Amino acid sequence: MPGSVLCLDAWPNLEPICGSGLGSSLFKLAAIDDAQRRGFVCDLLTSSAKVALLESSPSIRRVASDPHAVELSAYSQRVCLGLERPPVAEHFRGDLRARAVVKEQYNKLPHLKYWRGLLARSLGYPPPEEPARFPLPPTAEAVRWWDAQRPPGRYVLLSVSALSALKLYRRWAEVAARLVAALPDLTVVLVGKGLGGAGPCERVVDLTHRTTLPQLLPIVAAAQLVAGTDGLITNLAMAAGRPTVPLFSIIQPEFVVDPEQALRAPVWPLVQSGCPLQFCYPQLKNYRSDPCPADPELPADAAPVCMRFPVSVVVEAIRAGLSG
Image (cartoon, rainbow, N blue to C red; front, side, top):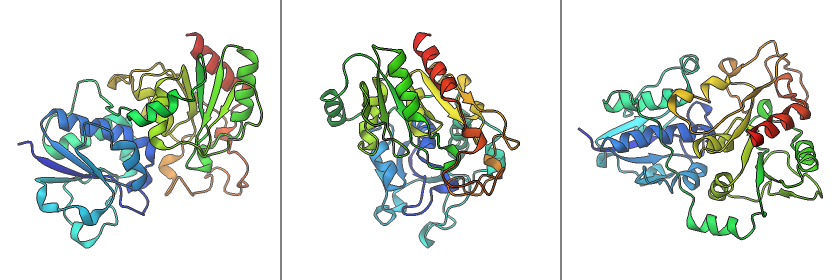
């Protein structure tokens, strides 16, 4: 019978379960939305960073980051939305209903299908077959903020963020400069916390290190196209139905871009060949901090082979997306 459910996504002030970053939040949100559509009332205990992003979702009754404010007896079921058992406090130990599979099994399924199936099995309903939904409307405050400063006309959004050096593309400023030179009616907006700093350039709006997570939602929703390293912002774009050019390095595109689950966007994934250990995520203990497994001596300021996309390739993919 449906009831109240506590979903544990990450332990505050520690690594998210299995090292999953903000990008996986959208897939887990779709799973929680499945449960909500079946009559479950879901709360989410997660990291403080994710609270700001997910608290506007109508599919989640409450999003919290303080475990001491959670009364376990108030929930009929408690589910761990993670790949491995988290290092939780004693009052959570042994109390989590779901035991997800190990990382190697996780990499055998599209991630959206994995999270939807995990929560369905945990709560006792059949795996969802209907298209996934990603209910995450921007707040009125965020919409007003963007309306007050968005550039006129159409714009392409470039996400320079990457939680790992293994996923960091270092040439977004060059991509931006070539786009505005080739397309005189286009503005380029840069967001994220990676390598920004496009420098003085007409029709390039550099918002790196200047946006909150809620402010990203209206920026993504109004973009003509979104490009970036596989992660939160490209996942937001696909969920919002925006044309997307994601750059993949450690994870196969088919695990993230899942047309069978009706992600509502035309997507042009890019993969750079040449690495002997292509798609190395299963071999990493912590993708945020591990060195490149194909080149452990790679300097910190150097790009691994899988992220050495020529600027021309990225620009042409974006131009193709804009025209098609």
